[in-house]
Image (cartoon, rainbow, N blue to C red; front, side, top):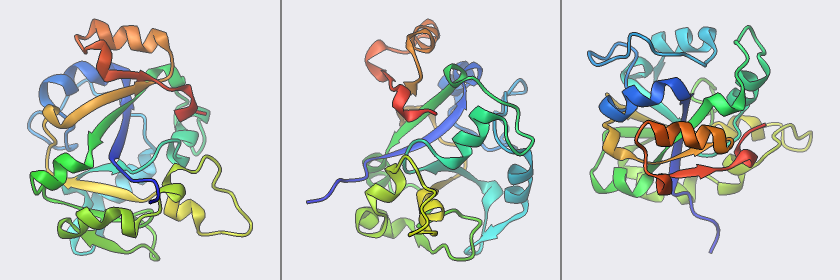
Length: 205
């Protein structure tokens, strides 16, 4: 039996965590949004996604997650490419959801087998979520290096997404991944239990 996809990841700035603990992971136009929210994404991509329809669904109505760590977007954020402000890895936190929880609660969501903006990407509804391990290759989304001359489609597949409709309540966040012990201590100061925090520098660049 191959490796099993169990989690979905959303990265955010560490200063957003106190608000997330209270209200969850929110849409940009949520009534509970954080007026002091620190954005770390690519503004151009964010604006495109606000206007884009994928499979008849408006992406602005969904909170997006990746299915593996060390994504191309994280690489851009850590290095400050494409006009994105460079972020220290210690300031970036992974909020981790468990796919089994979403399946259990029949969460309104869909997932893709690659970057949602790619014309090559296929869309799968929530009814297919129990089959995600047969649709998405674990090694594709967990690969560390995606520039591969023998597999030019790997980068697209690496960026497979899970998209959840509406705000995601904080109870769905099952853990947090940080770069170092300093970041761990900061999360603990926010009231997060130590056993929910994993230090994993290999999830960063």
